[in-house]
Length: 245
Ligand SMILES: O=c1ccn([C@@H]2O[C@H](COP(=O)(O)O)[C@@H](O)[C@H]2O)c(=O)[nH]1
Image 1 (tube, rainbow, N blue to C red):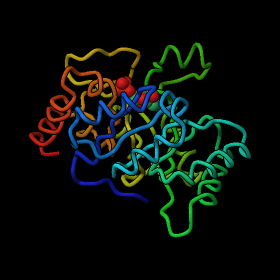
Image 2 (image 1 turned 30 degrees about the vertical axis):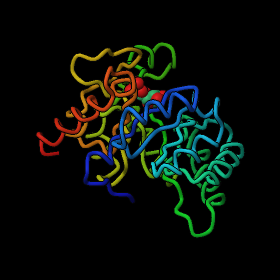
Image 3 (image 1 turned 135 degrees about the vertical axis):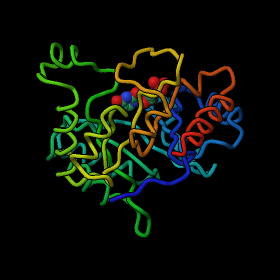
């Protein structure tokens, strides 16, 4: 099992939700060497392909390739085998694909990891942070509380041999209680005080997310959409450090 880095800067993953390499370059320039871990999601990966991952790795950044694989086990396995070749640090699947699919994904990732290289971390999305109880109950037809479903998916994920889960920071205490403190939690839904909630539902502030025990915070628009991204980054770091996280 993995342990979290001690420096908060290494635990902040900036979501590069852009559609061109140029926008990525501009954003990194404005962050002026601060960022250490970035997330490449579907928008950027589909637009720029694997070259964008190699570009970011050459800059010395850690890369979470957030493609949320969700398919039959054989296809998920093949997808992970291919993704492993690109030298990323973290990849993911949807836990809703089931235990068999997640175990197959892990197998594919192991097969595709080049000899001598470390296998990328493999985590599973529990319930998207944009989803609230009403949507989960009525549209997805999943009864109960979001927290209980997140814990259920977490235990499936652990059983399948993955390294951790994606969830809201609000669920981190129950995840750690159920799966153990070393089971990784990667948490989007981060909103500094006064920032726009947008399409997210299960949110909290960066400071609170650290206090709740999130291993990694995924932060997109609060940094990339700020008038001064470097200032937004520094404010989060300073607040975390002031709270002695
Ligand atoms: O449950 C999930 C899973 C992934 N995400 C991703 O995180 C970022 C969040 O961006 P913000 O701008 O900070 O809202 C985004 O790339 C999502 O695809 C998530 O939000 N929730």
